[in-house]
Image (cartoon, rainbow, N blue to C red; front, side):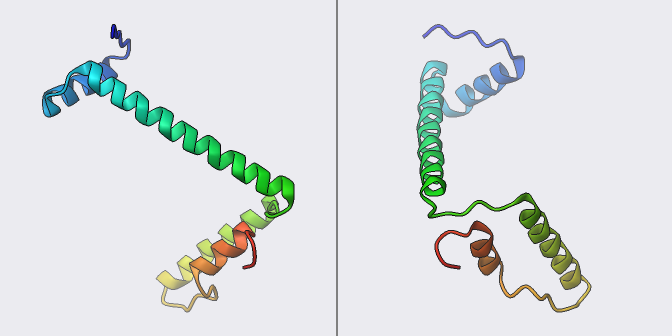
Length: 105
């Protein structure tokens, strides 16, 4: 493989990995690209699945106002907890389930 990196920081990082692992730059770049494409495929699958869930009505979209209100309350609860007050939020897991509106919460 003929590889020309124009970013000197990226070249230095590759050189460091070559030195630390004893593997050739071609092998490292091939492994990195394979990992990148695997991750890209998983991300696309997840996004396609989420789109299908939205399109079918299985998942309901959340308005910007609901998201902002959720995180403002979460932030206020964290501040209350830091100051020794009891938080009205019962659990993070419950609030996340409510926030995503996936299935029943």
